[in-house]
Image 1 (cartoon, helix red, strand yellow):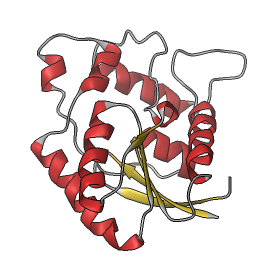
Image 2 (cartoon, rainbow, N blue to C red; image 1 turned 135 degrees about the horizontal axis):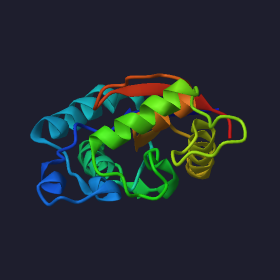
Image 3 (cartoon, rainbow, N blue to C red; image 1 turned 120 degrees about the horizontal axis):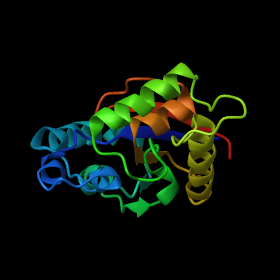
Image 4 (tube, rainbow, N blue to C red; image 1 turned 90 degrees about the vertical axis):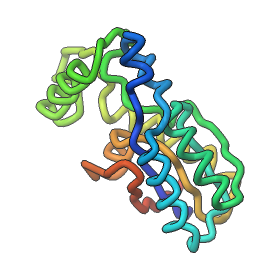
Length: 178
C-alpha cells in the first residue's frame, strides 16, 4: 500500500486570464497569487517530514507552479500527469467564467456527482474523474516505495476521497493499493 498525499494547489491568480477576456480552458493557464505561493511553501514545510520520494502534478499552471515550489523545497523532481487535471465543468471548453463553472458545479451537486440516468451533461461526472485519477496514481505509485505527493485540484480530491472544501494549499492523506 502506497501513502499518497493529495495536495490542492495554492490560490490561483485569474487576473491575467480575465483581463485578456480568455474564456473556458484558458483559465487553466492562471499562475499562483503571492498568497498561493506562500501556501505551497507552507504545505511543503508541513509535509517535509513524511519522506516523500515522488512528486507528480496536474499539468495546469496553478498546480505546476505549486509543484515547482514544493519540489524545490523538498528536493524532488516534478513529474506531470494529464489525468490529474481538474474536473471539466463543460466538455466543450467554452465556459465564460466562474459563474458558468459554479452553475455546472451546482448541477453536479444536485445529481450527486453523476449524470441523471439516460441524460448526458456537459460536465464531467465524478466517477470519470475518479477513474482517471486512480489510473494516474497507479502509474506513478508503481515507480516508488515511498510516500507520493500528488499536486492536483479540489474536485479530484473530492472524487478520490469524498472530502469537500479542501482549501488552497491544503492536503488529504490517501492510502492506495494499485
